Image (cartoon, rainbow, N blue to C red; front, side, top):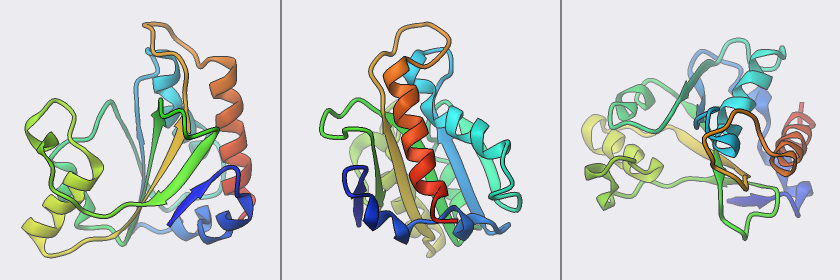
Length: 164
C-alpha cells in the first residue's frame, strides 16, 4: 500500500491510534541540525506533545542501524518517519514496507527493507511496518525546517491525526 497526500481518502487505513500500545514503535529518523533532515524528529516532537500514542515506544535516531532489527522483533507494528528529497513526493507519502536485503547493510546508512529482512532472517519474525516520508528541500548545516517542509509536516500530521 502506498498513500500519497494527493489521495487523502486512502489514509483512513493508517491511524495513529493503531500505534497506541507498548508493542508498537514510532521511530523518527533525521538530524535537526541539517534543516529539513529534521522532519522525522519534528514529527516525534509533535507526537510527544499529544495524547495520541502514550503507550507506544518512541525513538529518534540520526539513521537506521543493523541493531534496529533486534528492536523490531519485539514489536507488532512500527511506523518510521523520515524526510525525502524525492520530487515525486509532493508533500508526504505513507507506504507499507516489505523486507528486502540490499547492499546498504554494508554501508553507512542501512535501508529500512534491509533492517526488516535482517529481523526476519535472524529472528523468524516480522512486524507490520509503515514508512511516512515527508518532502524536504534543504539539508544545509542549519537549525530549523524550511517553510515548505514545515507546511508538509503540518499537512502530514493533519491527515494522519484525522484518523483518530
